[in-house]
Amino acid sequence: MTTQSDDSRDLVILGGGLVGMALALAAAKKGLTSHVIDRADPAELTAEGFDDRATAISTASWHLFENIGLAEGLAPFACEIAAIAVTDQNKPGRIDFVPGEGEGTLGRMFPNRRLRLALFEAAANEPLIHWVAKAHVTERQRSQYGVAAVLADGRKLKGRLMVAAEGRQSPTRDAAGITIAKWDYRHRAIIAGLTHEKPHGNIAWEIFYPAGPFALLPLNDEPQGTHRSSLVWTVSEADAAGVMKLGERAFRAEVEKRMGGVLGKVLSVGARSSYPLGFHHTARITAERLALVGDAAHGIHPIAGQGLNLGLRDVGALVQVLAEGARLGLDPGDPALLKRYENWRGLDSFMVALATDGLTRLFGVPGRGASAVRRLGMAAVQRTPLLKRFFMDEARGVAGDLPELLKA
Image 1: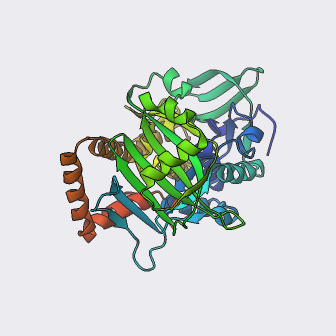
Image 2: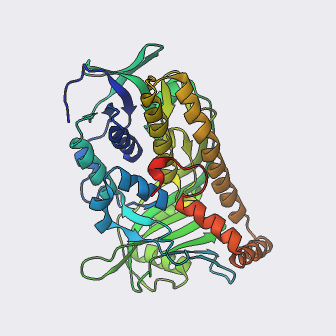
Image 3: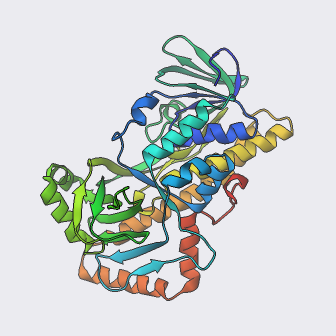
């Protein structure tokens, strides 16, 4: 990893989280150099117990990890998702998504900490990446000639294309004046690690309640054989503070009630965290010498676990466009390349965002009549192989016009 800051690079990536770092590594595989600037301290982000969250990595995203050399180190921490069970309040009429013979998994679950460790370690050993942590950007400069980020300590990091990978509250996107459509679901996701009595059998459960989805995602057993899952429980904003304040015994009882016995008794609950749920989508994902990736461009409901996977599709598409441009001798900030990225990713990410928003609203309609209609629809999907195939391909991230880096 180089330390000089006065060299100009192909990319100036603002945000060194999972998407920003994956972009830098994927770009490096194609010979593209980058400055990665992040406010956070990597030691804090990878500390034991900092983040109990786990993330579902789709089949296509796993191919990206394979293609950029991360898969081997990550594989021991993967918990494969062999099936997904979807139910309306644990009533009859559920859908079971199970891949056919030889089709592999529906995805893999990873603790966020493990993903960060793998990405950070690879970035630290990659000479084409100049990584600046614990840095505050005071000025962003873009012109027809190039881009630069000025840091609080006076350093100026120059490049040809600026990439905003700072997440939902992206200051780079806002400074560029890119219009954003957004709304608040008035819900919060409560996240915790659980240990439980019965093995999960590598099944991910999505149990829908009028207040929001209640997801149980499989994790690897602990070394002594204790069964573990990750809980993502959506509650209304009005109830969230009360749920977060519950003592462990009361919280376990509430979780058990909603689980409907699928994992037996809840034995223990890890540290709880919560975050507000909202939807946002930008009118554009590019501007002069600027590209948006991940949550800077689109923030969706975690109902289908596609947030990070959508960001990694952005990474694959942007790197492919830039690498093909480089072969033709084009500058990474060339407007024609950015237009191609815009056209490729704009519609796909919007359709996924729309679908997850529609699901959230559909399952949030209260009343027995609405529940009966949903269960009828789910029973129809269960009996229609073509529809099930469509939903499984979406879950695995293999539908649509896939970037090469996301293919096996």
